[in-house]
Image 1: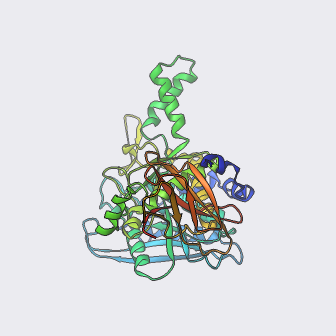
Image 2: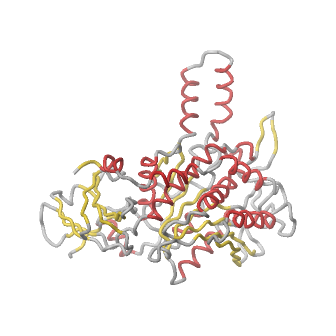
Image 3: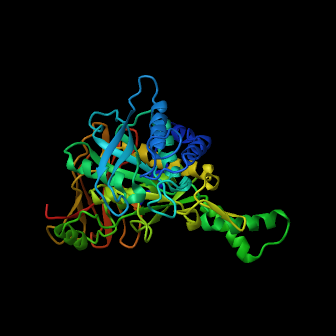
Length: 466
């Protein structure tokens, strides 16, 4: 039995094909898309829908056209508007029709086509007045950056479908209460159709320095002038450099749809940190390490930031696993504010503040996770440890994944105080493994792998009498 990291380093996961897709991500494309979205002036959910150049109507037409341009001749990318009627509320006093832009790339494997993986960004914007539908609200970082990441992922994958279905979702109404994502997720949950296996929501992913930007720029100017830096200034430079290499990934601990019985079982298994959303977050971290992405995830064990929210929450509330990507530092003088300048300092969510190279790194991280998840077998169902009798060893069982290219399964484990899976044992094609380890001392999980070496996210094992 050897550490998980050593096993992962030896796995051949079609590096040429994955790397080729990641290298196709273009900072220039991302920059152009952020600027184009910002140039609509405002994309407030209640803004003009008839102008060809300003307002949310023009923006959604542009997004739809952009998606359609990525579809190669004979391609399978389907693009459509999704209209949702929203009743009157605090931020939509007269009600509204919220329009999402949805692009769907069907999976290539028959038994995987009904598995859906989402990459999401909201294309609406707002300024300091939540109901100001006419004032400028360029929304470059919040969230033209996330929308640009979704568009770029579609451009890269459109001609190269994955085994499972990928949905590229650009939502409206996020700033008015997650309206587009909520309606979409609730409709999915109400249908007996394809199942959502994971949601990657990108919201505020273009400006990594945030509040560090201005002081860091001043320090760098001092450094370039040949002046010595203080210890505090050296630390600021190091922090700014590190910020360009990480993105926060938020995930819920307890599934929001858990009923009292489910919560009781979660508590009895000490599984408060092992929701399906948390497994996706851990998976993203392992794939980032494996693919050596230039932007690495900083895993945050919280569903979101305090006093803020995002579209992943709407999917969580509908019962779907999902995470949020957000920059490591935020600057609230550049979010939900009017566009102005004070004392020579610009304020507002402007395209000039978005770092296209960093945004490309975040997009590559999303793509790496999508490619691996969508090409891997399904996460094994009913993963469990046998607790029928007292014994010092542990018997782990699970159900087979339905994909015909499933080659085997692995049991993983970690200390109860550790955040990441550290150890692995190959179970071959069996659905049971007995280990000489105490079930009391570690957490166990199970994952599937296919003939190409792609691994599924981990299923946390719960107690069972069989």
